[in-house]
Image (cartoon, rainbow, N blue to C red; front, side, top):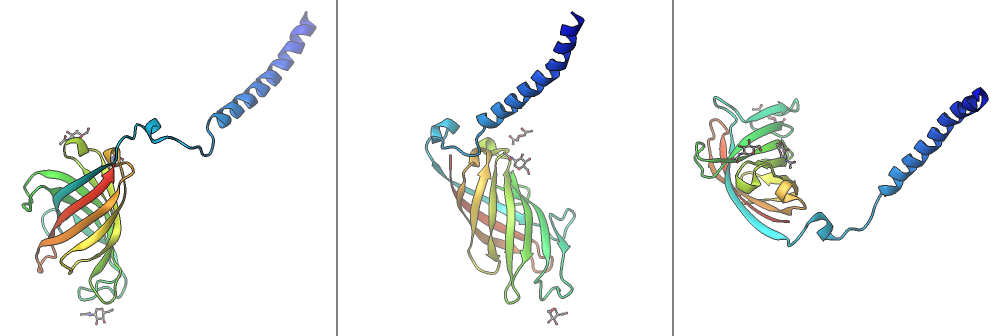
Amino acid sequence: MAKILLKLSSTVPFVLTILSFFSIFAIIESKPFSRNLSPSSLALKREKLSHLHFYFHDIVIGKNPTSITVAQAPTTNASSPFGAVVMIDDPLTINPDFNSKLVGKAQGIYAYTSQTEVSVLMAYNFAFMEGKYNGSNLSVLGSNSVLFPVRELPVVGGSGVFRFARGYAEARTHSFDSKTGNAVVEYDVYVFHY
Ligand SMILES: *[C@@H]1O[C@H](CO)[C@@H](O)[C@H](O)[C@H]1NC(C)=O
Ligand SMILES: *[C@@H]1O[C@H](CO)[C@@H](O)[C@H](O)[C@H]1NC(C)=O
Ligand SMILES: *[C@@H]1O[C@H](CO)[C@@H](O)[C@H](O)[C@H]1NC(C)=O
């Protein structure tokens, strides 16, 4: 009896090892690296086209700046901003008035990338807070020649209701204060999403 027990106790760990080996295999096998899916399996129905319109407030100087220079080159100065990197958490409002309804924030960075014009590379998210868009985001990555009347920035993706988003944003300067550098920019965003 004792001999059998001894035998069992020595085989149990072995059996467990074998079992866990197989269960690891089972887990690996149930999640392949890639597979084809039908869009309906992700509950994707018809693609929609949405147009969003709002105003972006870039406050460089004020009681609560929303736009902060976090790095610059030794050669960066006011007349040659090339090399400056700016972090933003800019409010998006329904009207040009800063105190009008807040519909989201533009969060990310822009960096001065041209030695010959005032042009920035922008990489940021529109984090929306309004209605069915609350908690959903759009990601924007593009260049912005800020003195041009209309700039076009690609929308490269999104989350929440904006999953699989692609489209573009048109930016038009609504007002610019040359003393402070504060700007209000009108945005029209056109996106396909599900
Ligand atoms: C600003 O920087 C540029 C390029 O580095 C330089 O040519 C220019 O003289 C500087 N201007 C001032 C006002 O310092
Ligand atoms: C947006 O969602 C957050 C978190 O779910 C909630 O606290 C907030 O009240 C919502 N805002 C609006 C405007 O619906
Ligand atoms: C959208 O961005 C906000 C702010 O960064 C974040 O809290 C939220 O989780 C994001 N939503 C999704 C669906 O990723």
